Image (tube, rainbow, N blue to C red; front, top):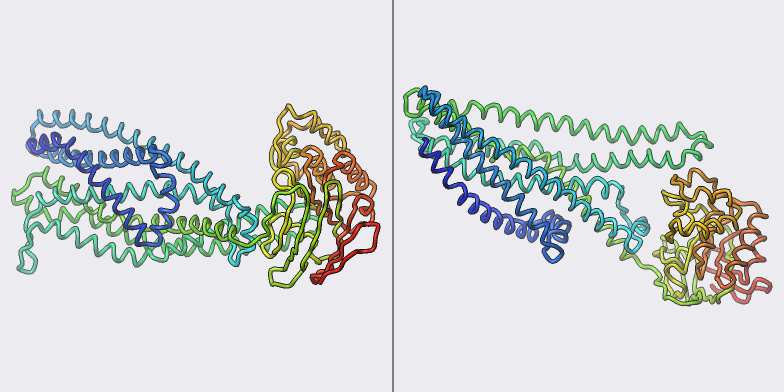
Length: 605
């Protein structure tokens, strides 16, 4: 057996090269076939190939090659340990002290190499996960923001649920799952081939019902594991659906918690704790019900796998015991047989024992692929495409509700620099929806639109958006600002009666919770003064201020930006003095338009 050990050691380098290239080719062919002929394979390739393609960079593929080589190295080390066990136990049986110490020295070398290989593999694997996750996070975030899919996705027939979870959590699960399952599956296949050969050499004939089966050990382990795998798949199949539901229900419960936190003041004013408690309880109980279903199914699945694994411990000893006691094999052969049988059994059982992991991975793959599909569908929704122009011009603009009912029909409008338009009408007549159409957000609109684009246009909503971070970033949004811009920012704050905030420009906070709604609306006006756009759309942007402050804010806007065009939505008559034109909507498609001081010049149906 020592000769066999030496042969195995001498052949290690050639074996590693051969196994690496064969496995690499098998991996490439398998991936191509899966991508061509299976739905989930195409989903995987859609997410993975843009990162792995050498057209972008060779580093990911080189890292995959390194991980594959280390996996093959691990299999080879297991083979060498198998032969070491044989020699070591044979030395014990022969009471050969010299051989005993010889094999202990060999074990020290093998153990050292094994530890180093494990550390390198751990670092390379985690580094690969981190780099891929960074890239995939950037890609999916960009895809979500591109074409305003994050907003337009709400208009889909089946909007994607919990996009935040798909970006934050599912990407990590996908990356880690891809590496561990792919390398694990390949290692299992190579281990199966190697230890089947070892088991073949150690196995003898077995008589069953008068029929002699040659190499019975090999056939028995295959039959044993195949039958166990079939039953395990039948038991574990529902785990795929349960895993998918678990992620969705977890995200739904977390979203309800976040929404309650963000609207805490409104809930407190309404004293709506009872309703919120019921909502949270309903969503949590749905998650718990699915959790119990996973527990019961997991107990069946894990219990079956544990029973199969425990029987597999004594199975090779039962088959080899007659040959051992008859002297046909030595103790080392007996122990190597058990170890080889265990490796073959583990390799064959990889897909059975990993079924739960595959189920979670499949659910993650479906969620990420569905996320990309939803973003693509959101971008494909129709919208009025604006042409870049120094004026605001609408030709035949029509806006409908999602159910097809008209809100505005055939609107023609022209606004020159320095002019201002006030949009009025009863609640629900489509004033805010018209602004959405002008911004290119509303999918149910047609017509020709020309206006300033990009940073030359700024929209102010009734409840301003304040990003997380420093106050200077909130004032400059969507522009950028640094400490060198503090003087301009402080001046803008002073002009809207928020001068007391100037010393806090470098302070980071959730400013939407620090400032009142009225202060937030004034800050939005400071944002206009800082960015100095060519056109400003204001959707009841002064609703939380009194008439005197509203008058001061609009007067400041007209004084500091005399050439800017204003498009305001409002109900108060005090706004009339700051606008040159007015547009009235009735919500049925009809509209009237004219100079502010004159009778409306036109009405269209």
